[in-house]
Image (cartoon, rainbow, N blue to C red; front, side, top):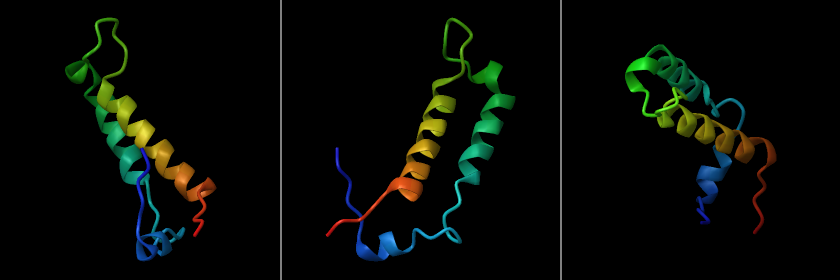
Length: 70
């Protein structure tokens, strides 16, 4: 699946405005509530935690490795 963004949205991806720390704080919050949120029979982390980390990984990949070809 390819998602496109506008030129203005792309131009906003600068270090000063690109902050994924809220995603990492959400992961920390899930860790605090891990026992209550656990949706895994084997005691593994909740899916929400995994999804938040994946979102952070994707965001960092866009910022660190992304390019915009026209």
